[in-house]
Image 1 (cartoon, rainbow, N blue to C red):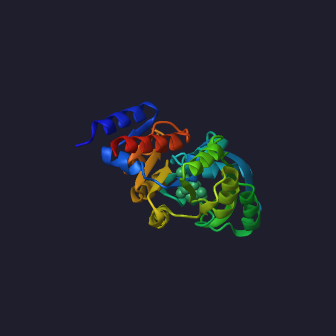
Image 2: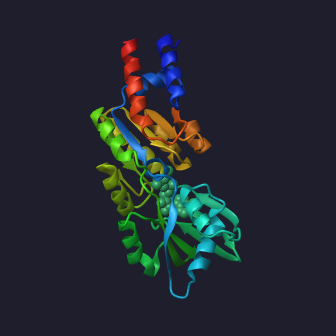
Image 3: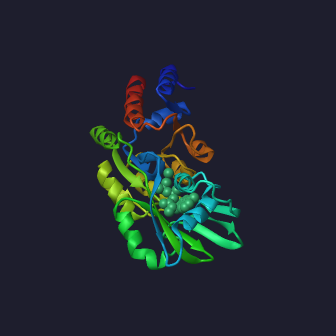
Length: 283
Ligand code: ADP
Ligand code: MG
């Protein structure tokens, strides 16, 4: 059975927004030495906005955005929200399928339209300009029409303002941080510098995130915090999986041991502190 002190500690954590699934989870939480943090939607504000559109010769910018929005209105990905907001009233694509960590495809006006990561889709003649946008910290997705690169869309998502302070507080607690992201290395580095995070693993597919967690786990207990369906394998692979935001995807919450009701990352050092104090009462 779970000691009453642990029941009480779990109860008080829930009152400041940290839901802990069991007494065993609470005890494992207290010995975490490293945290892997998803970038998009966890370190960033989750208010991405389209800030650049590049098109191949003869392709209209507004039309390219509308093609992308036709697909993205079927997706809950943060990038999708930015693209649909930039092209209100776009038609809806048919037969849409999304591949977590890669992108989305469907049929529009009889053509096959695909939007996704430059790792998944060739940027063609736009390649150099795509790299330039990424160095400025933008996430760029490529648009293909019938397998031909027709446009690149740059999306900017600002770092959450509390992040640099949270990373310093974690360091003071002896908890290291690694950024994990499916995004490209150039964009990830630009953001990691702002965050004060030195260790970055970029261009990861969802299953690669789980592998990265296993490797980090060789040096001690590791927690993973993320918000998306693409984070589910990594949350399950970590000693402690933390789902951020009560409105996060069901898959993320189901795979998690701990859920934060809000999106404030200051809950992370606060929860570590709470779990460590709780352990001292028990032992
Ligand atoms: P992160 O790890 O940063 O949360 P994801 O794993 O969700 O990112 O996605 C990785 C990359 O896959 C994105 O940067 C984007 O290039 C591409 N991608 C994923 N889903 C979509 C989508 N719905 N539309 C366009 N691109 C997508
Ligand atoms: Mg994410």
